[in-house]
Length: 127
Image (cartoon, rainbow, N blue to C red; front, side, top):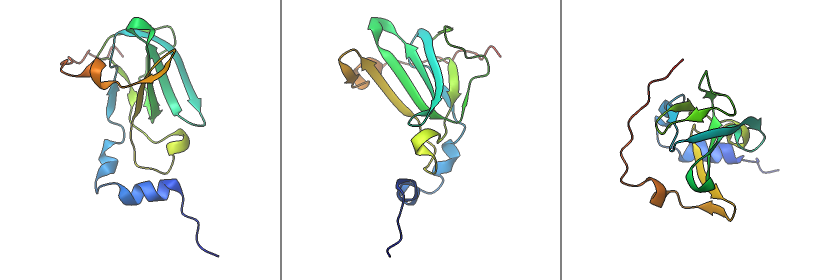
């Protein structure tokens, strides 16, 4: 019987050497907004949802950990620490990475137009 190779094993083989160095890298909020949900689910693992301008939801998934003071209902500023890069949820066994998405009521949108050419100043961690 042929050996079954998992998606995680394939991703690890395709990842460039040293890719694991991104594990625990800080994840900063891409927008001003309010944390509307923090959860650990089967797909996104440790994930944060931030409601931003225009009713857009900013999604950060596969985090290894959350910022210590992060709670649902907390306002966040662009550049503020919300978590750390990981490989939780359905990314377990793959190289550490951030699944980032921006969603509206109509579905996913390309975040490039929202984020390009806008410098970010880091906000000091209040913890």
